[in-house]
Each structure stands twice: as structure tokens, then as C-alpha cells.
Length: 320
Image 1: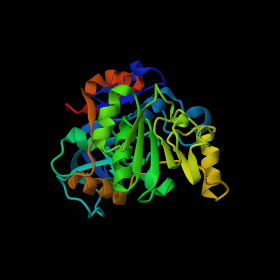
Image 2: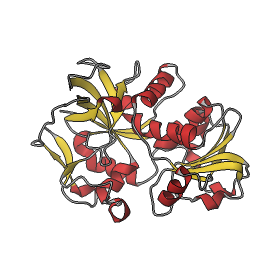
Image 3: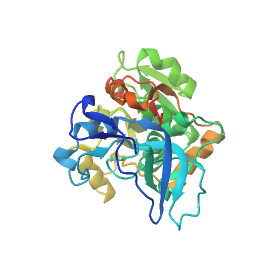
């Protein structure tokens, strides 16, 4: 089958669009999806560069060469005998829980509980843009920060893939949202539901007056101590980037030894994908697509993500 692979870590030039990759077959609890579109995320860039290997080699264990991509949408074409939640021909979208992903190919193999039916009336590109970033925002705000109605939430990087979902999800959870982004995106984040907006070039996120019950650093360029003066008593800082600083802090949080800093470690599951799907169907959540690239222009798409100035999501559209 056709697939986007890389045989070595490096620049976008290591990516290859090949036509002889082995086609997988679904086993127990698995589904095979004919991929129509694939969402692209900053983690795809970090994986391609080998950025996790110095300190997360125990997670990033898939040998090279390997298939790129963490999320997709498409048509279910085969399934394990025990899979009863879906039928052949269903339009599904989801994210692989394998650390390296492996779904940007002609066919993608996923666990049945890593996908859900696509929302009603959305394109393949819109459906593919939702799983990873939407789940990250949901699990960061609802689970890590335990956001409640009436609380104040600051979102740094509010116009990006995760950030633009976070605005909408925080509002769905009943929070008041302060969105931090560039001047050109202030109107965009207001349209998404932000109550207050701040141009980071005028006021850096840590200098914004709180108090905030949650600071969600979707851009990942700060640390918890940067917000010590703006977090409310009991407030929580949530980061999205695994690092030598955030991983130990998350370990301490999970055993109850610190409560001020969390790292969201996103996990694809049917229940949360259904929450996102329902919100989309109700008009409470939407994916904004910055640009769609043909899948064979994957190098250009990776370079676009590397600018770190995307508005919403970048998507690869399958042509095979």
C-alpha cells in the first residue's frame, strides 16, 4: 500500500511517499480504515526529528523505517470478528495510541476503541483535524485542571491546533476564557468564544493579571513557575510538551505530591471521541482548517507546521 514513511530522523526531506508498504490486517479488537484525510500535529514534527529519543526512548521504540501520522478519518473497510460497535462502510475518525502513530497511509490499523463515527455533515479533512488536538484540549481542561463553571482559564497559544479547540471546550465547560495569541488572530479567537484576548507581543502570557484557576499552555513555551503570580490559590498549570521538566512534575502529580503543574498525556478512547462528536453535532465545537495539502506534498505540510504560526489545523488529503 501507499504510505508516508521515514527511514531516518531529520528534516522534512526524510519523508517519503512510497507505494510498497505492507498492508496490515485487523486482528481481535482492531479495525482497518481506508484513509481519506490525516491531521498533522507538532508531535509529528518532533517524532520525525527524533526529538523524544534522548529521554523517551522507552516510549518511542518503533524501529525505522516507520509510517508517520497520529490521526486520520476514513472509511472502515475491515474489522476484527469481535468488533461490534462499527459496521463495514462506517465513516470514522480517530487517533492511534501508539506513540509514533503510523496512520498516514492508504490504510490505517487502529484499535476499535481509538475511533468513533465522524460527526454529521463535516468533510473528511474536518473530521481528521479533530481527534488529537480535540482530545488533548478536553483531557487537559476537564481531567488535568478539573475546570468548572465560573472558573477563569488562560489559554496560551490559543489560535493553534490545540488552542483553538481549548477555547471552545473551556466555554463548553462553563469557564471564562482569556486567549493569548498574535495580533492577527485576535478576531479569530474572539469568534471562537474567547471572553478576553491578549496580544502576546504586547503582553507576555505570564504578565497577564489573574487570578486564573487554570493556565493551559497549549504552545508549550513556558513552565509552571512562570505563572506563580497569576495562578489562583489551588490553580493549575497544564503543559502539552513532554520534557525533562514536565515529565517528573507529572509523575509527582499522579502520586499526589504536587498539584500545581500537570502534563496532559493524551489518550484516544471512544467515550471522549463521542464527547467531541456530540459537541460538533450540536454546533458547540468546530475545527478550523488552516490549509489542506495533498498527501504527496507532506514535506510542505511539515514545513508549514514548523513555522508555529498555523491558525487551527493543517491536514493532509489522501489521493490514493
